[in-house]
Image (cartoon, rainbow, N blue to C red):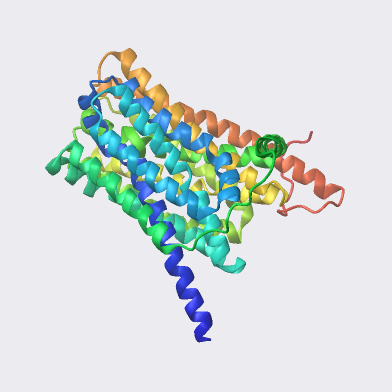
Length: 440
């Protein structure tokens, strides 16, 4: 018994070191959310140019999801976590010292690369440390602990920026990442030596073709597309608000102080942490509620933003605006429903690939919304309240498009499932036909 407890204690200690890298990655990912105004001033850039930071960072992150799976299979999670920590550290140090826009863009692209290597590596490491029955709990705790990084990117980072300035703040952020990499190197067990393989280039090409086939197979299933659009729609406005445009909107359009705006972001992170477990329990016990819940939350979010933007030409009442922001934040935990759909509608051979495809959705949505918001502000020629009203209305339209696609592919997935049930084939979720279901 003592030996079993000792093994568990060692597993938890090692896992906590790996999670620390993920926590740091989430901190880096959202750090620009409270530093956007300072970045615009430091580099002398327009709103659309500010959005390019998010385009590069999240674009690299999304594009690296499937390659990360291949790399972690080949080199092991320890090597990838070390590479991730040092890459993110170098990126933040470069960002701290950068005085030109192109160098700053390079830094954010490197940050996205390092960030992309973390979550999949942590999950793969946990899979080797914990029993399968404990693995779902470990995933949930990992995500919750990662949110601590989001908390650190709000009030603490804002305070450090205010008191220490740009360069010291991001130098400290970079050094924290380097320290986490050193901890992984020193405390996590070494992976097995990578075997030398002949014709490595040919093997790599064959692996890439295999991945391409799996991606096409997963994307062809309506369940995967429904999951993709759930993730896309649920994260669209919430991620856009959190990673870049929340503080500028609250400060420049609504008259909040920077500290007050950071406090709103902090509250939104806390809401996401609190809302996550109940949503997970509800959808686990009642699978039929999954997509309707996502549709409901996203519909209320879209309607709420359109209503307040249209109804108030002056400042939006603070209680109403803060309530809407907190409601929007619930889209973050709701987006995990997309992963459940990927798991249920795909076979074991491609479920990992399908999960990667779904995970791209929310980041594509955030990139799109951030870009159109910045472009709209540029076209308006100002950053006053009226320009922000128009720009946020355009950005929320990205979520509206996703909502339409979510409903469309949910109905198609239900139709496929109902056809399978009619001919006696097994189905991952038991459903009942309704009058509004597709007939062909």
